[in-house]
Length: 508
Image 1 (cartoon, rainbow, N blue to C red):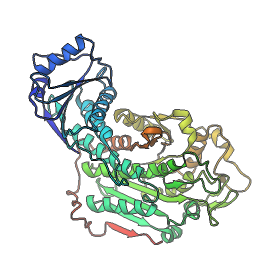
Image 2 (tube, rainbow, N blue to C red):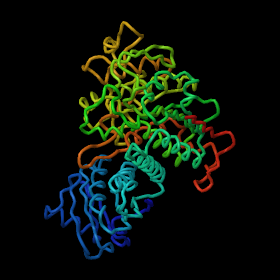
Image 3 (cartoon, helix red, strand yellow):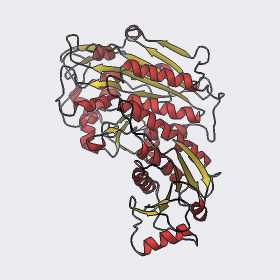
Image 4 (cartoon, helix red, strand yellow):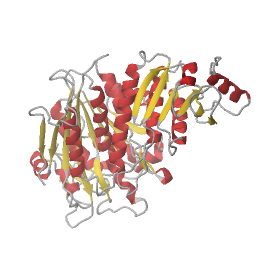
């Protein structure tokens, strides 16, 4: 979808040629003497339009307005959250229509929040998954013009919003792929294509390389699957050489049966979404490709399947992790922490300024927070605050949960340094405490996205979260106004990377 930013007032919107004109109407809407203002004022006076967020009123061939279809969308108090709700409702209402060009008029006082809401809200509601359908429905909407009071003033916000929308859609598409498509090998290929197209560094390691490194915990989880594991390393070298990077670690279980501790069959198909953390890291890099901030970022993705087989790891097994710590397996369905712990140890070699892991880790986090906020755990106060602020700004919120040492008591065992599970109580915190053991040498945060990475029911599908949060956090770490240190990346049509930047050596 093509987005355009344009300086446009209410009177100008009336003359704008398009298939659909969407007017966001906050509670403090200021009417002028133009046809759009007259329509809004009449609708409000008659109480046919409520300015409550998400409420819509549609008009056809309204007098004095060039667009044949007009949607008045209530935007509540005009905050970013309410504006996004309004845009989502309006965009959803035209999703199945033949409209190809839409104009969204943002309230003049909404600034960056309005621009983000218009772009990201439209992208989210108009997304259609078609990859594995024999007769895919076409997405008719091709062009969306965002009308603002001053396009020059909102240009940076517009660029950020477009990047976020691209990254979120990339993550959603990967998350929605069926598990026989989105294999560990496929994720490695997607990372390589992304790197080639946008100038990132990339390495994709296979079982032999991972064995040489010594990732015994990660390797054990993958043993029961015919699909070979992959360990993906992505690099955005946007900052000065030698500057400490931010490391993003994404859990990439491309399908989770639970292993020998097999899951109930109900809704097991949704375990294709267990690579939501990996998808969010790839989606964040897709967004970074648009903006190229002056910041060094590393992406680490351990990816494999968790399957029951004669070769599978078992309850009672003792694993030796990359850190040297031994782990007693009490439940093979607590596999995410077993692949992440080796990646967290691997992250130390980059001497990072911060490490953030992202994982669909625990059902307990879903019980605690539902699908509204991701769970946040952090060993560093400043990092925790930065992530919380980024989530609020990106409308991709998280909620901080505790890391008291007492929560780790249940992980004690007579047979290894640590067990991989404890009792049911405080399960999300206990899982975070397990990971914390392997993240002692740098500022660390863990995002449990088990409740936010996908939706079930009739709206089943990946959400692309928390790409918005991660991008907002990373941009806040870059120098103010900092563009790319490097020259523009090669286009997809000329995918050859810079010499020495790409190392793909995945040995099965």
